[in-house]
Amino acid sequence: MLALIWLISVPVQRALGPRVEAALVDAPPPLPPGVPEGATNVPVMLLLDGRVIRHGDLHARLNQLLPEKFAAGGANRSTGEFGERHTRAYVVDGVKFYVVCERMEPNGPLRIAGVYLP
Image (tube, rainbow, N blue to C red; front, side):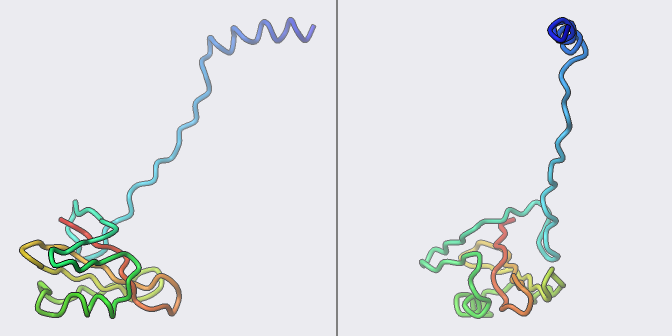
């Protein structure tokens, strides 16, 4: 009896079609304030003179790598998940890019959270 019910249910299931559940697709996170729309986040920025800017580097190291003379305007300050966030544009060797520094943990140091190319 069970076999007969199973044999009949198979064509009915095929006629009704497979069950498909829609998956939610995560939208990309919004860009931090001060970064233009369409900018791409890169994990590492290698400058022509050999300096390297990486995600996770301390903000103090960024100040050593990129002195004030490379800044294109002031820092845009906003609030991130764990406190303050600094976004600043730099121009080095004719290339403009944006560096976002924020805290990665409560009361943690400011670290590079993103390097964006327009």
